Image (tube, rainbow, N blue to C red; front, side, top):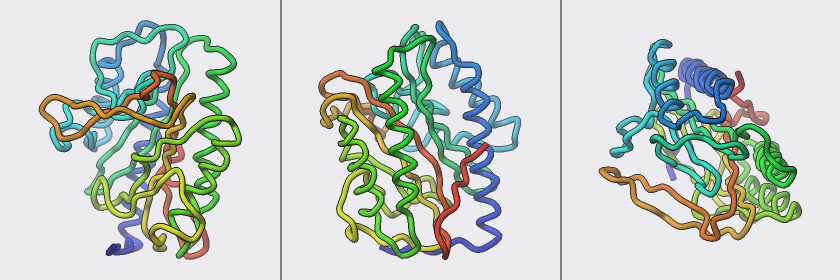
Length: 253
């Protein structure tokens, strides 16, 4: 694995790209409502991103047809916006990546649509806290397994499961870089965390079993994923800069 740390100038560009991604997610999140289609979410993200002088990174990425990923209920990730209307009680993960001045900021959040039950709220909150536990495990020259261990320990104790096949990744000069950042693992194992390099921490937390089903996206090499048992899945994601003393979350609005 070969990772080239970011220069000070590149870090400043990453900060701007990540701030825009966070602001985009905050903006669209306030508009999510019952009856809204995921295509409407996609258009909002597309228009907002362009008005800020950036481009939505998913659009055209390996043939992906939309500007944002919208994953509803049992869709784990990479859900494709379409004419599906949101219903009362749904949950939806909106995954935004902004490309600004050659750098990528990546963040996502699971939103509740209308009123949801206590069990659903618990799952969503567990996913958010799992992300925080993973971020807190980041140390310079630590290992990706340290992150995965803390995430999986927390999620398992809550009675949920983590998706193993898909996870976080390096990000910065390109959309997806090394290393793979799992939501499970052993302390001291995995890939080394290099200071002044960015990663995403994005646990996908399932209400039921961990198994997922991979499904094709027409015209794209990207796949989308659903829970095998059709139970709910929730996810949160931040882009994080590994520093020489710890970490800094860049996707805060």
